[in-house]
Amino acid sequence: MSDDGSRAISIIAFIGSVFSPWYRWSGRKDPENHICMNVATYGPKGRFTMTDRGRSALRQSAQRIQIGPSSMGWNGNQLVIEVNEVTAPPQLSRVRGMIRVTPSAITDQELPLTQDGAHVWRPFAPVSRIEVDMEAQGWQWQGHGYFDANFGTRALEDDFAYWTWGRYPTRAGATCFYDAQRQDGTHLAQAATFDEGGNVHNTELPETRPMQRSLWQVKRATRGDEGAEPTQVMNMLDAPFYSRSMVKTELQGEPAVGVHEALDLTRFAKPWLKPMIAVRVPRRTRWRFDD
Image (tube, rainbow, N blue to C red):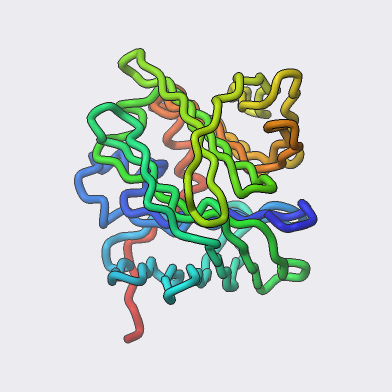
């Protein structure tokens, strides 16, 4: 998020593009044949890209992943992201530039999201600075950044019915919430507060506070102090099964504005939804590197 709160950016590198209908239709047996660099910019003239690519577009090393024309690389103290994508229909414009994420520290924490460890959340750098330099007017800014990863060996909708996640910068660092309703009837409810040194501190789990549903009527809730009334500050991504937004809440007496996500996996599993998603997620199987 930019320091002035007017812009934001989200970048996700997928090996096995979990929200791609093409990956689902393929039987999800070959994740390296369904890769994606999903880039979304929020604010004036925001753009969305999510191209499902084949295995010829993937290159990996210990420090770098390249997916077609875009890449992420670790240079020792920064995550450097080079973006060169085309927006999803119907816009069809280019999104190009460089993003640098500088963590205050790297954590050694991870959270199993299921009891058997089939899904794991790994918050590498909950407290970071971000520098954005895109080839578009006004898209050069700095702000508060975040870097994490999710790993899984089963489809999300097989194990989860619904989840919400939130990350809120605070004076001390950042607080993250993970709430999930699992398909087996159990629930996950987790809070984690990280300081700038990457240390995690036990924190009392605030009560769930309801929010207005998204435009697609995805139910939403986050956590906050007693009397807090979480409100959407910016609508970032609104899909039939997924909501991402900038949200203001209150944590330990401190106003906090962060990124909130709600994911309705019961709805995502419906077969009728996949062709709708395919319109926004084109499949490109042919890619050849120049070198």
